[in-house]
Each structure stands twice: as C-alpha cells, then as structure tokens.
Amino acid sequence: MAPGIGARSPWQAATIAAIVPRTGRVASFLLTPERPFAFRAGQHVDVRLTAPDGYQAQRSYSIANAPEDAAAVELAIERLEDGEVSPYFHDVAAVGDRIELRGPIGGHFVWTADDGGPLVLVGGGSGVVPLMSMLRHRARAASRVPALLLLSARTWDEVIFRDELLALHDRRDGFELVLALTREPARRAADFGRRIDRPMAAAILARLPEPARSAFVCGANPFVAAATEGLLAAGVPAAIVRTERYGQ
Amino acid sequence: METRGFTGRRPPPDLGKRVPPGQSVTRDFPVLSAGPTPTVQTESWTFTLKVGPKPVARWTWAEFNALPQTETTRDIHCVTTWSKLDTPWRGVTIDDLLAAAGIAAPTPFALAHSYDGYSTNVPTADLVGGKAMVALAYDGAPIAPDHGGPARLLVPHLYFWKSAKWINGLQFTEQDTAGFWELRGYHMYGDPWREQRYTDDP
Ligand SMILES: Cc1cc2nc3c(=O)[nH]c(=O)nc-3n(C[C@H](O)[C@H](O)[C@H](O)COP(=O)(O)OP(=O)(O)OC[C@H]3O[C@@H](n4cnc5c(N)ncnc54)[C@H](O)[C@@H]3O)c2cc1C
Image 1 (cartoon, rainbow over the protein chains, first blue to last red):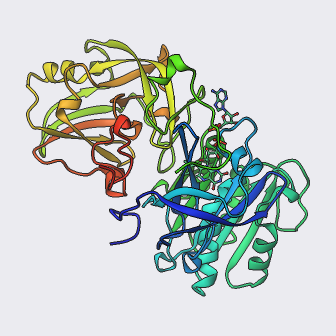
Image 2 (image 1 turned 180 degrees about the vertical axis):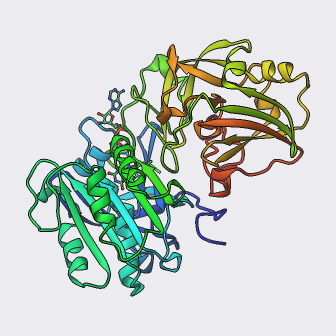
C-alpha cells in the first residue's frame, strides 16, 4: 500500500540533528525519527509539543526533502509572530532536542515522477516546502518531466531554497524557476515584480512544451485562491489542480 | 513525552473545556480544500436525496430555501488543529429534509456529495436528531464560496472535513463507505474529542 494511505503513522520521537537558516524568517529543522519512514513528495508530518503539565500543541508541516533522502525529515518552518509552535522552533528548539512527530500524512497533494507531467507548481512563501520535495524528488529520480515552479515571495532574500532552486534551474533538464517578487523589482529576465495574476499564469503556461498535466498550488489561503483563479482563467482545467492551504 | 522548554499558549480556563485535545482556538476562519473553489450558481443548484443509487427527492435552490430553517451556534474543529467557537449557522436540518421527502432515515450510513466531486461519509445517527444540517447561511449572510457556499453540510461534532462544502446531495448507504478524504488517510468517523484524525487512530 502506498505510504500515507492506510499506513500506520503512530507518534514517535525524532531528534533535531541540524538547524539551517533559510531566510530571515524561515529555518530548516532536520529531524531524525527513531523509526524512519517512506513517504511521497508533498506529504506532511504532524508535530506535537508537550508542556510539563501535559498540555499539548500540534501542527502540520510539509516534508521538504526528497523521498530518496529519507534518513532525516526536513521541515522548513516560518516564524509567525505570536504563534504558539513556530516561535518555539525558532527561539527555543536546539540541536539534540527531541520532538514528537507522526507521518507521513496526506494522500492527495502528492507527486511521483511516474505520474508524469508537465508539472506546474505554484507556491507562496513557505508554500514552497512540499513543492521543493517534489522538485528534489524529480532531480534525484533523474526525471525529465517538464516542470515549472512559479514562486512568490516578498523579496529576493525571502525566497526559501533560492540558491538550490537556481541551481536546479541551471541544470537545464526541463525544470524552470520563475519568481514573482511582490515588494521588489524582478532580478532575472524570466521573473516578475508583482503578485501572481492571470496574465502571469498565461505567460508561464505558454513556456511549457505541452499543456500541464498536473498543477499543485500551496501557500496561505488568499494566495492559493488568487493563484488558482489565475491558472483556471488561463485555461488549466480545475480537475488537475490540487491545493494545500496553510491557514489564514 | 515532555518537550524541553515548551510551555504553550493555553486557551483561557473557561474555554478549555470546549477545546478538544490538540486543538487551538482561532478567531479567523481558515480554509481547507483539496482543489480550486468551484463556482456554484444558485439558479442551477439542486440537492438530491438518494437511497442507494435511487434518487428519492430533489429540490431546487428556491424549493430548498422554502423548507423549515433552523438556527444553531456551534463550536467547530478542523483536523488541521484550529477550533473556532460560537459559529452561527442557519439551514435545513437533516430531520426536516427527511420529513420533507416523506421518509424515515433509511439506512445506517450516508455519503455527502459535493459539486467538486468530493464526498465524505457520516453515520446516519450523527445526522439526525438535530445533530446536522445543510447550512445555507453563516453569520447571517450567504456562505462565501471559499467556505462551501451556497450550501454546505454542517456536522459540528465531527472534524470539519465531514461538513462537506458545496454539497449537492446526500446518499444513504447500507455500508460505511469511505469518501474522498477517508480514502486518503483520514479517519472514517472523525470524533475530535477522541482525536480521530487519521485512519489508524483508535
Ligand atoms: C498541511 C499543512 C502543511 C503545512 N506546512 C507548513 C510548512 O511547511 N512550513 C510552515 O512554516 N508552515 C506550515 N504549515 C502551517 C503550520 O501548520 C502552522 O499553522 C504555522 O506554523 C503556525 O503555527 P503557530 O503555532 O506558530 O501559530 P498559531 O499559534 O497557530 O497562530 C497562527 C497565527 O494566528 C495568530 N493567532 C493565533 N491565535 C490567535 C488568537 N487567539 N487571536 C488572534 N490571533 C491569533 C498568531 O499570531 C499567528 O500569526 C502547514 C499547515 C498545514 C495545514
């Protein structure tokens, strides 16, 4: 049975093996679970924190690494002001700490190289995380499925995984990175210096060799709503669009 | 397992009893859905009641709105761990729907079907007895498309994915048949007080 569908995912302890800053507000937490598990790109884990009196808080985080590199689970967590769990990771958690998690979870927002393409990925801010797993998987599987990532961020420096994405783009193996910076002008010829809109969706779709076969949109809800609207208006059938919404 | 250095942000004590384990209270109304928000026009909207494969009643938007309506203010709990307290809804209870169709609850289980092709399963016992409704209004206004408008199921005592958005029918089934999310790893029943989030939760 495919991981995540009917698979057991009990809580287990994982150790923070490394913390890697990604942008000013986002860091990657590499967790090594006691019992490593197989997963598919796009799936997430649930994380649970327990206070001394037994009070618990639980949140979902997408897996950023490729299924091929499953020894450590990489979570890229954005620090939300006044949040309960994300500031804990940024301000308190340290290498060597043990955190409870369960997973993999989710059987819908997933992509495997065998599913083919062209693949259109649209991410806003930390919504890039499950898409990163898909792109890392595509690279590790040496897939040549045409793939395009339209990634929106406020500024060049707030693009999570920027250098790795630029390097993937430079492989010229059928993957193209397009950035939409909302508070800065575009820096690369292919990029945009505005929010994602319908003409932008149409322009990036025109860069694909054939019509998209699947589209994945991930980010905060207003972003997902706007980006999805753009894709549909540009002629992408609703049936091939999958969304993951991170909250307000 | 205690987490080093975690104290947490608890709900105020008076609300604590209303918040199931692992949930936290939000003032926003987050959105969770698997795909694009469908545009559902009330002019062409219909709601079909089926027993097995057989349609037994169908209403247009105007006919459905003419059914007896009930108001209810309830706490709702999303599997992604937010809870929202005191959400006000208006709609047609499943009891009134069955009465309008002239039938009693025919089978032990039901599947709610939606305009976007999704479905979710709920035992009939959790739909009748005033426990659930097809909601037509939220906070005194038509339900926004993002939140499942024009009509969504409301089964507030189960995790909120059971409250199918963009509902267009209810199908009574003999067997408990997994719906869209239930086929993708989510729990068959989904009681927030027992934290039945995923397939393998007891
Ligand atoms: C499937 C899935 C995958 C996800 N993947 C990722 C990921 O890869 N990376 C990532 O960074 N996030 C991800 N998220 C989001 C993540 O689960 C958390 O929602 C996020 O980290 C915020 O949690 P928090 O505890 O820090 O904030 P919370 O405490 O939940 O608060 C969220 C925001 O609401 C505000 N707020 C909270 N309570 C109140 C209140 N009572 N009144 C007013 N304002 C309030 C806070 O100030 C904060 O800004 C994912 C979510 C889902 C559903």
